[in-house]
Image (cartoon, rainbow, N blue to C red; front, side, top):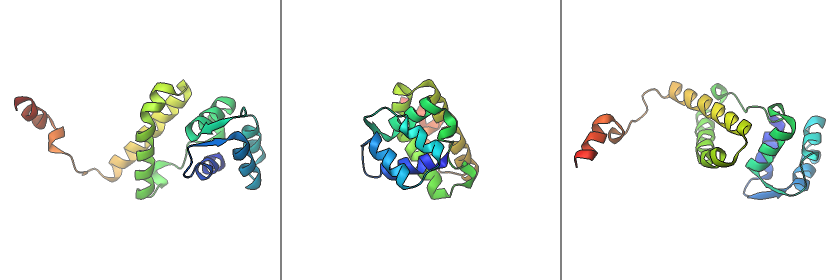
Length: 141
């Protein structure tokens, strides 16, 4: 459900942690659908980082409550870049600390966005030092 993702993005703007009560109050104030409010109501009391809240909702209610985001092909270039930056920034934490389901979701979304990026920018700038010849030149130096 895209409503929950938008709510979390809005609630966490400029904030590290937010209480379950505040997230719930904002959902009610925004008149989110009943299943979204019910899902938030089921979260245990406490404060959550955005990724923790999203993962807890996935564990409580399955992936359907959060959805998978806007399809990569429908994103503007700027939104695609932003989404990729966010996924790459959160990769290490997701890999080391997220549930198996959250890691699978992260992998799938990353693959979807990276595939779309490569489709749009097949002639992207490639650093010569990242090529085989560049690696050989570094090892000979």
